[in-house]
Length: 513
Ligand SMILES: Nc1nc2c(ncn2[C@@H]2O[C@H](COP(=O)(O)OP(=O)(O)OP(=O)(O)O)[C@@H](O)[C@H]2O)c(=O)[nH]1
Image 1 (cartoon, rainbow, N blue to C red):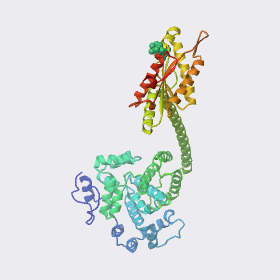
Image 2 (image 1 turned 30 degrees about the vertical axis):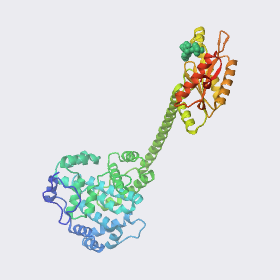
Image 3 (image 1 turned 90 degrees about the vertical axis):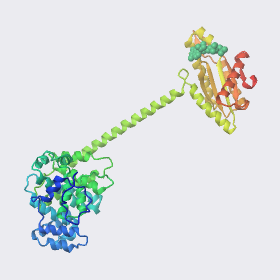
Image 4 (image 1 turned 45 degrees about the horizontal axis):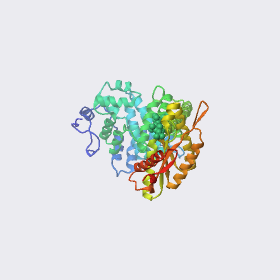
């Protein structure tokens, strides 16, 4: 961006924290004789507003020089916007007192600018937008940030005055405005492309050139910024622009409804506030447009709009509710699926009891816990006898059935005693007995042998199939085991001893030593 060759600022404003204007705009602002001239009265009000030491009487003295302006200011002070529930004022002093300096300045500037520009093609829309935005921001601020209300009223009313500059610079500008009449963001983007800055910055410098306070100029410059919920003043300003744009669109009810429905979750604009703002605007707009001498923007069917908004809200809530239920169902489904995966990762598919990796995980846990606490921990290693023969004689399917039935016996055992049972591989099974001594493990092994002896594990053509098992037992107290694997190997050795001794029996690792 080029530096402006000659600053449009009156002396004393050099410290204004504004970005520089592009050369083209700065030159026009400096030299353009057709830009709206500020009447002497307004100039004096501006002077007073720039001086922090000015008293209200200086505003009043300046305004009283123009009886017509004084009358209009009194009317504003008595309007529904400022004078509702208050006794009417009849003097300039009382009006300025009621309105405060910010609003007085806005109204005085507004009157003068509107009077001088309203007959220029395209300008009426600008002022209608300004009035709707100013009234909206005032209504919103009353509820969300009353302390900022008057300042933001001024800002909203004057935020688009920079458009007057572009109207003077470029005879094609009215076409651009017309093209983007209902899309302010698109207009701003086009201005930046064509002139190197938007009308907010041009308006800020224009206001400074008239002698407006730096705070007002900065506010105008930043009026297109997007403000978060946490900055209620800025947020109200954003909302007011959107309301004004929707109000002046071709389908105001629909656009306002869409605008409300598209607000972000957690927005400060709740349904009650929205309906209050729309109703207040309906009441305030006619007298205000009369006061400012501008054409009344289209009248809305507010009742219908609010009905539609309420209905849309209900539909939205219903949709949200349905979405939430669907998501909950999806989540439950996912949970079920995860549970299934978890179960599958722990379970031996043939027998339905714990698989080897699950056994090993717990073996580690029990082993190190016993080691740490010097507490008992025993392991039972079971190998079904002559299983190859069984498979060979009756087939694999019968073998599978036997494995499943044996696993059920083991599972019943784990229900009775605090232990973990699982298939270690092939026809080998493990029982892990945390907190159990070798003697307890032996008791349990015997009980298993007895129930195995009584159990029919499969039927082949009505013939009962029974099996025996060789069982080995190892316990933490049997030796110094350096790892969980060494304890399992010891139980395995016990099992082999049982095999060597003739199968269908129980042997302890201790006996093999
Ligand atoms: N049906 C079936 N058989 C299996 C399965 N896994 C391993 N086997 C069989 O189990 C048999 C184990 O045979 P061996 O290791 O020789 O042992 P054994 O025949 O039981 O003899 P001993 O252990 O000495 O009593 C093999 O024939 C394997 O094919 C399985 O999932 N289903």
